[in-house]
Image (cartoon, rainbow over all chains, first blue to last red; front, side, top):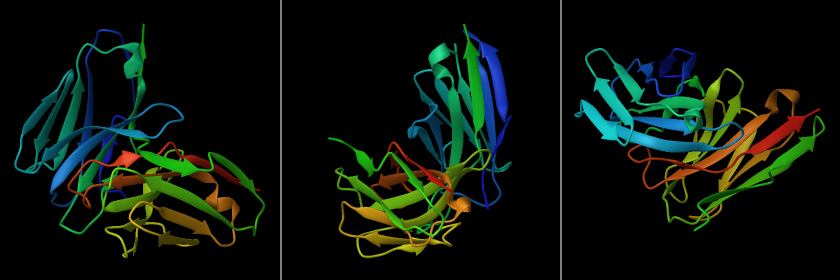
Length: 111
Length: 113
């Protein structure tokens, strides 16, 4: 069963706008990761945030983590057409357990 | 470095046939994984290998077997393919189980008729 649930399932925006995707999970985690998947390709790691961190930045990406609400958000600022992809959150539980992926958010950025 | 490679890229099987999907990584990673991706279902873990010599079941292991041949290679075998196994299969690797980012291969698109 999936641990993470992304919201929304699909998001359409114009170039230059910001895109926000959310991820909720059920049990305590060690870390939470975000991945991107372009159509027909494998997943690419974007950012990892550990359970004792609240916010992380990487270029135009900003990830927040609220362990009390068991939720995370991924913000992509100033979106570009090349950001069109599916975005997945993945959670890591206790030591010795594998990552569990959510079903993803499909982002479409039109020019 | 090639990263994670998978063969074949595409495969069509008939129900009941068997095949092995190959995966190799050249990053000296300890952990390797096999996922399947179906429309609307995200990625589901089939099997994983935390380190050379160990394998464990994931969320959807039925109908599959795996072999961690050595530190570099992790294969997935379908003994008797069924139409329900039509999917895109991804192999991934990481330095350590769960603590680090995973690197994914390009995928194998499998159709079972």
